[in-house]
Image (cartoon, rainbow, N blue to C red):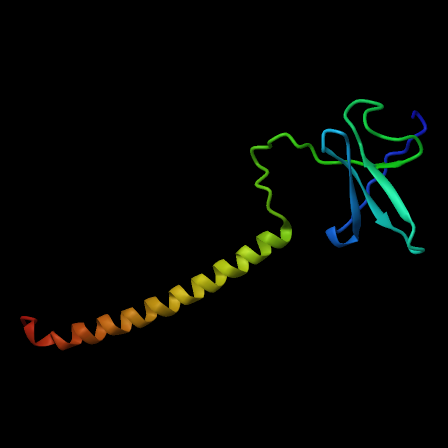
Length: 117
């Protein structure tokens, strides 16, 4: 296993054909189909040598599953969607406030006769 090579891949969820799991049902890698439709197995890099990887299989690093206080588990796409949603809420809020301001001004102008000079 000393001749294993660690490589970094960017693989989308749609590209993954299957996931590889161990006897404890822990995800240890994934399978993608190459240009010829043949299965290619990739195993996640382990913290300790020799755990869970087969000889000759390329490995890809997996982010630590430990809880990171700054990792909220949100993807870039999720942040972009949430930002678009918040911008839409903000624009709707501005429209409502503008409408309420106009209604308040109309009501206030109706009570002009009560002002003392």
